[in-house]
Length: 200
Image (cartoon, rainbow, N blue to C red):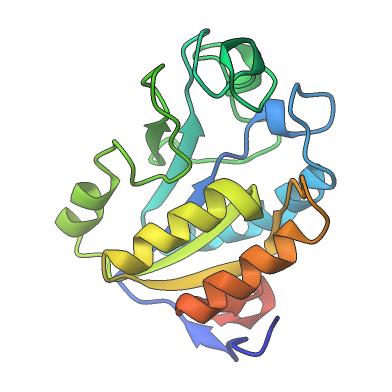
């Protein structure tokens, strides 16, 4: 799955970090906990520090559901209630060291529509274009849903995508969903990278 793994790469002024849905409800103890999700927080903090210290933009996507969102089991969806707007579960964990300058993109806010991509129904693309961003470094939760769909849309919109292979975790509703998602992202043009391979 790592056949497209990048060697060392330097950051440029046209790069941005996208932290996908690293929220309390997807962490251990949350209503839709993803196995091993807490393990990526220290790694994501390294990426955040790297981008912030180099004055590069950081975007966060954040599930921000109404309490009767269509994706919830009670409404006929497939997921337990999670990331209801303004609840503790919808917030970022305290140990995720986001700077005040990080730009929040709220997703899936329409109760009648599911949205797994940070681009769907948001102004993320407009914000990236206005900042002259051409390459996105994307990681977070979950590999097989919101990361996958955000990467798909990023590539459709013409961005280069660096997939933070050391800072993603999958739900794996079916076995190996995460591996299949990584393979798909790579086949579409994403390049996998680890923090140790970024040079300044």
